[in-house]
Image (cartoon, rainbow, N blue to C red):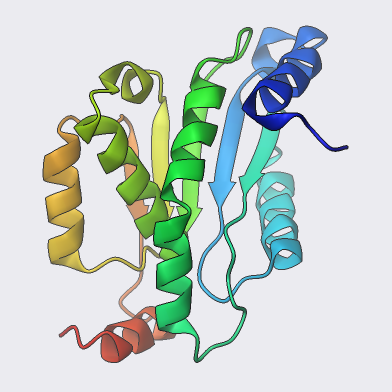
Length: 183
């Protein structure tokens, strides 16, 4: 269905929540990562939600990835361009009536987009929105450590719980560090 902007999106979520029991009223927003098409992002998120047996509302934020391994810089530009739209999406979900917990999950380069959006909310004085978040999960975050520290400092009190899942043996993150000249 085509929705009429943020208001239409919120109305659709609230309509879906209206018939749900409280234990099925949580919302997870998933943000895909680098080199991921819209379809691949939806599929990956559907698999995660299925594996976790998540009974709530599943939402997916898709930013334009060029879906090419050599388009790393172009994907980073696309995610930065998408910040305002992700901020609007988070604000819309935070204001949704009848919802339970609001949990944000981001993978790979999507984690940088999420952190930039949380930073933007903090810098624009939207602590009220940040206070509505019931958790953040960063999966294999593709963020320079110093950039992450600066983002976290700007955000201030991070939403809790705040989880970061990463692995020393993650070849994609090692390649990202090499491409972006990080040690």
